[in-house]
Length: 79
Image 1: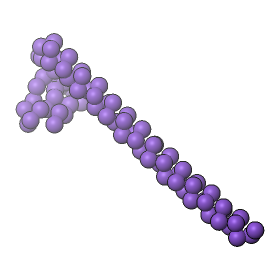
Image 2: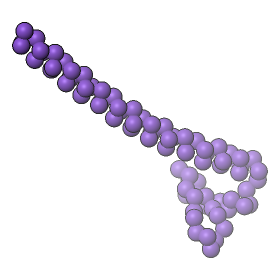
Image 3: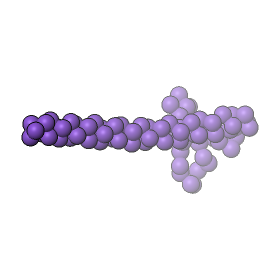
């Protein structure tokens, strides 16, 4: 797991497998990889949020379908 320290008094670090690394001391390729990881983490969070919205919408449509079918049954009994 990758964890970033956010203490403004100390140099920015990440912890990976219980080992701390100072970001400013990393080579450019490591910084680029870290940027990809951060971007992927944001995308994963966004995807989870979107999935929650989709699941909520699906549940709402299922409830709407149930209500519509119940109304059809009630209308048929009136006839």
